[in-house]
Image 1 (tube, rainbow, N blue to C red):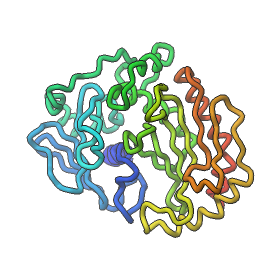
Image 2: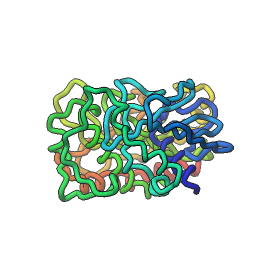
Image 3: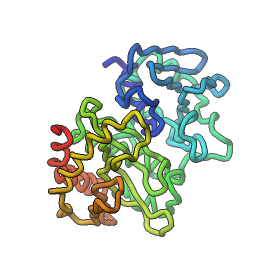
Image 4: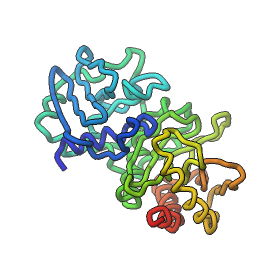
Length: 319
């Protein structure tokens, strides 16, 4: 792929799944012609569905209603208050997070020459004072030197530890994406009150609404710190976000019955719930990791869960 396509995929993955344009597909690949323009401190990237803008100067932010705005920053930061989904993205993009092909492009280097990224943020917002491991690439993992539990000790939600969340979620994606070949990744920051992580959806040609959430979960009214959280879910019959997906919803009814016929609780540490059909809930499996796992062990816990779900995913792909 070209660096422009790499950048589009990266920015699409930053977009909340519920904010995808209706009736035009969920693929992270550009739809139709991909157009790019760099002017006055703003790189604008657009396909037939949506326009992404990476802003280098505060006075040049476009105001189109269909635009998603991203601010660059030296460190991960909060860019806008909750719920803040469309428009200005909730979190900034640290320059070290950009794909390598994008970072090395002439156009992006031109944008990166702007030195006042952090001036775009409110004056009372300060860079997080977190000793999190980093070299020239944000996604580089040094699990032996990073105690993510300690980082979350004074946790007050995703806003309070943006750098830790960015690092954590980047690590999960890097170490688990081999289990999700062809799936679409979508960042979920604060759309739900009890989780922050990735929503993954299967390829469109499979005509299904099944999705998997991987990330951190917590009890909104509880005192527990976040821990590993996985959901396998789909929309129950007749419950739709978009009416255009009614046929996929019908197709998933048979799949759901087959999966429920054999799916059992994983023989893994943690808490695992298989909601009954009578409960009419979206998830078919709810799993919470044990507290206190290292980043490496938690990644292995998620990987084991995906192996447990191999047959369920096979059914979804073949029925």
